[in-house]
Image (cartoon, rainbow, N blue to C red; front, side, top):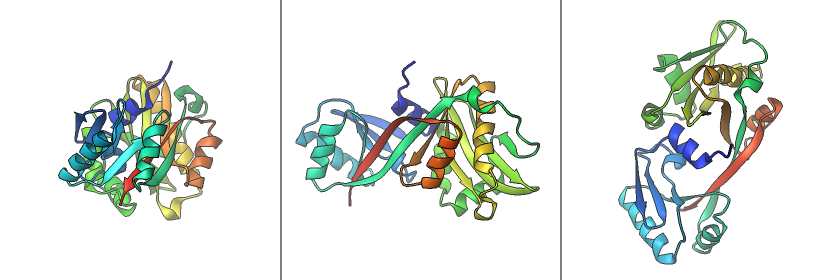
Length: 236
């Protein structure tokens, strides 16, 4: 089965609104970050099309930012010529959800629940994930859950997972600094895998920046493989 990763990202981490403008899909992010604010290509692009997209993004009070996926090389070159800088190249990792349900999760290590508890909001806030990104989570229309992680009877971290078209994607996974290197990241992904299967998703996925060595090592250690990639270009 071929997975449309752009649709999975939009379905599990949705923008406030979407609008087609010529060959571009524009996203209204309302402060929720690059993923929900970047324009993406839907067809052949001219310089005038880029001009129009830039004007529309500025009119929304947003930065001029585009998401570039495999197949967007021509647009990537056009934006580079205009002085756009590359921002946050990312990997999309995926595996069968059942691959991570081979061992039981220790008791009281991972809780799946929605709405987020106050402690989960506090952990996210410490990591710079504030109300605007919590609003993104609220907008996700399919099955979704928060992940509350605990270690030695203390809060250890939190995350978010949602499902689109049979694919569960984990977002906003954050481990408290003093609880890192305790294996909580692995238990979080395993907890998400159990939740995914219980809610009809056969594939588990996650996004991380290519520069995040720790996260890339974590997902590789679980046997997850790179299933896609993209990057942004932004004009400062």
